Image (cartoon, rainbow, N blue to C red; front, side):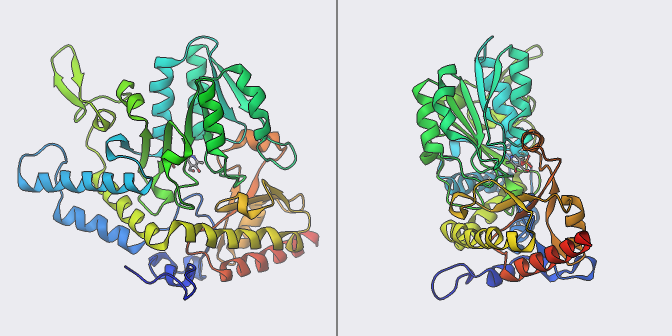
Length: 418
Ligand SMILES: Cc1ncc(COP(=O)(O)O)c(C=O)c1O
């Protein structure tokens, strides 16, 4: 257990930073001001320690061997699953460990969608979805001759127009799929309300939790979701990792998409029976060490306290929203102005400075922000933008990081104002 907090109980990002070796490096010879944690989080020392401990002391193929080391490998993997499941408050028996959130969302669309969608059925998503929660639904609705409909965004602010939900429910969707926190707008979806509306018309709710699980307390049962996907690398885990929670009855009915070793009950030359439970969706050797690493990341995030992470990040976001108009007067902030309706990030555009130019100028000061359409191209088209700049924060984000951001922004403005 580290000491991560100030005397008043708030998170101290300077203490937190000590756990992340990347901040001891100076990429390009400059101190790092990493404001791109929504793309991927930095890795804590203890995550890599847990990874190497598992690989150096318990390495064998899980679920296969009868010898002691193989049992240790299996136990380590399953203990990690249980820890990750506890982090989002679900039973381990309902948490499928996969290679990414993208894989998780594809699994829902392809498996549940193939079995349940029929001609003319409606799947509802928002216009703000990350491509990972849009394209799988495009594909499956096309394949099943079903319809894809959209909860619109405000063309100016980008805010998702939740008040349209009531009228959209008249379409009697079978599935509503949306992000818990938008990776461009930063807005937190009112999931309990959406789940109630969905269930009232017999629809299921599939939630992309990638931008929520590392940034705020998330108890999946409280969201009302029927499926909930998340990504390891946004939480301090390894790159190739993700989780899919599915309601037990849905999981039991779902057919696997990938087949092969480790997911079978018995195999004959011409057919096979599959095992039950989460293992049915984890064909091949699982990334057990990645799960162990993610479990260590969960421990750390819980030591920080997710309510404290959320409060710290809200403070950082509030400052960005407050100071941005002064540093860059033509900045158009996408999503809600109220930091309390957000988690973790702010995206904005400027007619004066293209987002890519801005990112390049900021990089000269060691400030790393994301420029582009952040895997949400339709949203940017809706807002008539070719790109935006995105600042995202984490438990290790300090006021010094934001100072450097604003110095860089003013510098960029000077260059472009001429
Ligand atoms: C909202 C959202 N959904 C899905 C993804 C994809 O996650 P993964 O990288 O685990 O496939 C991301 C990551 O960029 C994301 O931000």
